[in-house]
Length: 441
Image (cartoon, rainbow, N blue to C red; front, side):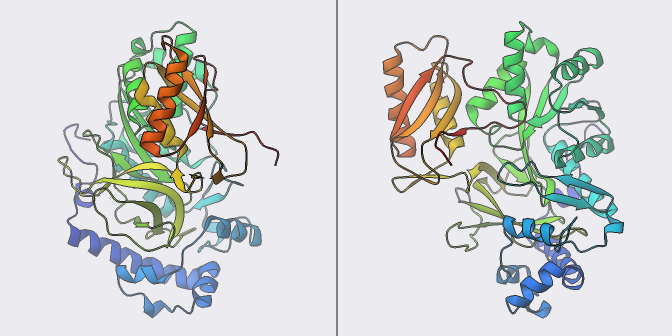
């Protein structure tokens, strides 16, 4: 591939509004025909709602269709294993099955046909190119093979980069790949480089000397949090850009360009995103500053196409145009709506707490742990939070008061902060856990 090319797929990534509508609508109509004919789940769901195929003629008509919820997918898989009633192909056409991580319940299984695999690879390559991965990079992949993120390995190869499969929980293998092979670009969760920073500190290794020059991070809020990004970039002397996908829908469909003003939608032709009001379900007009829940519809999927799937991902639209030339609007993931806490009527996301606390660096390390004394989402104030103080925090009583004050000012809730020494809170190699339940279930 030409190193100077600006986009992986310029035609799709730079569609004007009319071109985007044309591509999305044509793909949606084709997908609807496939689903209406082959998916028992949607035949029953749409039929029960009194919806006929001829009712959906335009992209706007998508709003007529009911949402698909995560629990429905689990019920579908249980009713007709192994790939569920929502599958639209015979099992004989399925070439691969992945699992979600199951962080918000039992894992679900995701099947791919040859065509689905190719679509996933295409959008993943768009995301990788957007985030700075190039054919001359050597890329260790510290991700388990059972999860959908393992599909990125194939895209790395097709992009022309060199893949080094490492897997989860293999720190020595990862360091060996970096030192012995000159691996210089890492695709991982946001927690992984933070974990490696701590590992290097404990083992007296110079993280900058490893030679990693790029991190493409996703799978959880973190890469877009300023103090998290800064900590990784300073520790490794590397560039950090963020990406996002959805296990049940599409491996990668959002990616941050070099201007780092949010993640561009890059799933044109494969997926259609909507942003809704999570309370009313109303579709919201895309504009800078908008917040809401992401809803996805598959528009080029054979095996398990989902329509209006509620992700529970809560996002902020950061911009609708960009100097990089990509026309997909940009978002930052604030957190999951099902992780949201309600404190005296105020919606609070654990990742937002980490973001605000991080503004007090270096008096704090940026690590937090919310401790719930009662089942969420409603929490009786004050919210109990453990916060790691820095190496030179100053007067701890003053720091505690400052943290509680800034949380009250920025996020409008009262807290009870417990300061703990640096390195006290657990570090995670895969995904960070920001909430701990300390009540009996």
